[in-house]
Length: 280
Image (cartoon, rainbow, N blue to C red):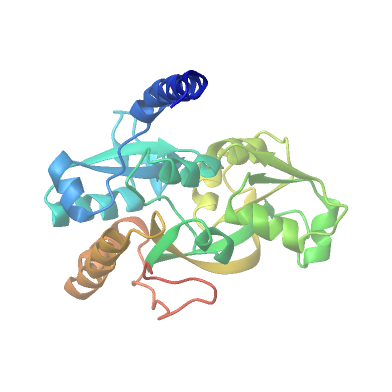
């Protein structure tokens, strides 16, 4: 090998070593993904992404404890795996990024099963149902989608209600988007908006702040919620599906429904268009 070739090789090796050195810190900072039940058991906990401000689905109590329907379901899944659950409260628009970047192992976070979401996360079988509605003052006339154009409407940015209000309201409608459920509800009760896209449980919270003034006006969509894992993680997806079948059969899911929803467990579909319940 000539001296010039040796010099070129040495320079290449030095550049490669520098690149590896630069990359190493970033690699060390990347979170370790727990992609199987065995790996979750080995690390000794299940890290669950959940909503922190959306009762009765997920919320933090005054004592700092995560509570709600999703919290109870996640705790049951932790028991199934034999590990404690660590909850990470998330805003609506941070749920999927927290999962895909490995900040959490799974989402039990009021995740409506929508085809566009199924392109980036893996849904389980559904375990609960919800209805997306428009809420307005009892004194206001909102009977059709066209009526929405007369009012300013608040929504939680990126949530199913954002999608439905945007889809159904006239193009001229003023839609104001807020970072989460609580800010959007506050916008309604404080008069920043005149109507609100939400789910069937919003009205309970609004009633506490402004009793007797508001009601559900329109129903947009019946939705099913599923747990979410990362795409391609077959083992954890399969484990969650077995778990959901188990709690539906043994009555545990009905107990959670009785506590938070006070209705019978919904009849869940065997399939949803554009959404697979099983990882491929």
